[in-house]
Length: 263
Image 1: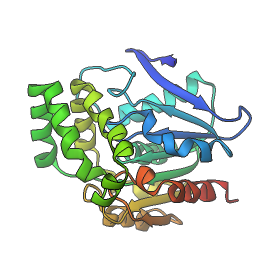
Image 2: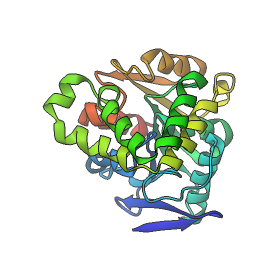
Image 3: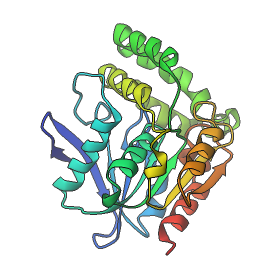
Image 4: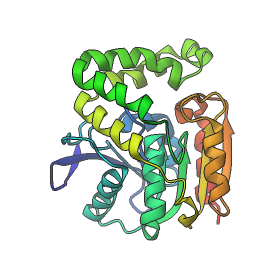
């Protein structure tokens, strides 16, 4: 198990793939950990050195008092790259990871080669969605995380996928139940407060936006908004709910590899 030391604690990461290949960073969604990308690793490591990490508050990474900000989480990524002496990377983030990707594109474009943001938006939800969830999680702790897990299957996957692939759905949703309540609530605050609608046009790196046709959390309209506000951005859509990388599987992986490998 590998960690880098940040000022306040350790950030957990994993490196896979050829040491001399271009580095691709994968950033998890709210309530999951770096294993949400397991389905992509075989395809991605044929082309890239894949760097996954547990976002602060998730998995085996540090949990610090919240609320967090997307800027804080973006700076964690830069600290990880600095600690590993990696100058430039491709970056692919989903949902909250897509917000982190937008922050990096706006504020640290010199560290990016290409950027992929998936199942995300420039602004996700509003305080009326996030504040009651934060309150419940901080009040009820692990019990609230289990309740969120049980409710998340319908948000994260279409019913037909969850029915046909119960083990895959359970593997991902169990990550939510295992997430620190304090860390989850702190990250909810980061997502609640993020709003990049006025800053998207400053993203100058090549960008691919991926959406899920059945995504009720971050509908395709949010992906189209990002594409329309970033010059030259590409757009792809798959039959999927919120976790398109899991549900679309190989098709998702192929589209990302095609985009990142194009000259």
